[in-house]
Length: 182
Image 1 (cartoon, rainbow, N blue to C red):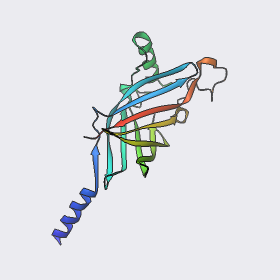
Image 2: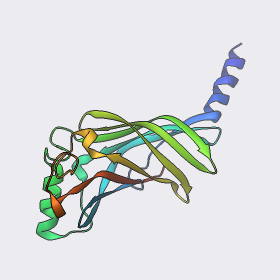
Image 3: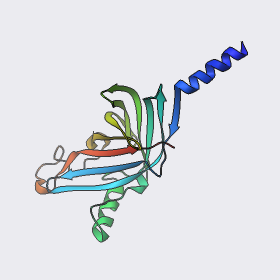
Image 4: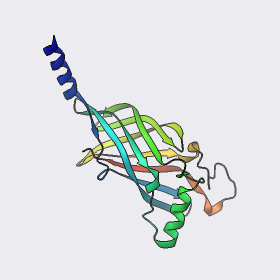
């Protein structure tokens, strides 16, 4: 009996396993667009894992360290102003919400791509979100798009404020993910 249980546990370990994300190689690039252009930057992956079943993605979680948000399209004083504003309660309220998380609830595969449906949590608010991930040389890549106003990020939103003209910021934000396991 003990031998049968050992064989069953060993088989389950091979069929289903999780792999921690390599936080040094995984990355998140954010893109926020406005009427007059866009801003881009990076957010460090704090932790996470990908769950695999029979060699295919079956679940996972990505925890982003919001205290590391940067901008890559500006330098100097303008970069500092933008990052300070993104950290403020107008946007991500980083003093009170140091992380953002995407946790998979279901995964389906079609044509070598994974459609991952799950929960995105930003500023303590959880909303359904989905992303498509593709296999890349060093892991999985994909883009998660979300409506920032669902997370109480309404600054400059044309959905809430009229007459913003060229100061309007679009509600949709993109997170371009590269997920690499250890």
